[in-house]
Length: 65
Image (tube, rainbow, N blue to C red):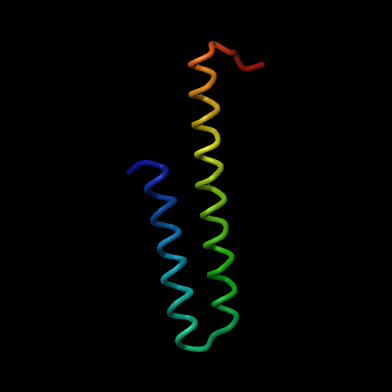
């Protein structure tokens, strides 16, 4: 399982946790789940940015400093 799949799974888990907490009325758990979901989205975005940067470096022959 690749990193992106793990991040997608993490985001789905947080979404399910948020829904369950919302149904039970646990506001603290809802907030925790929202935080986890946002963190998963940020990590996914970071991974996509790093992939794009690596691709551009390969394409244009730019070396890391």
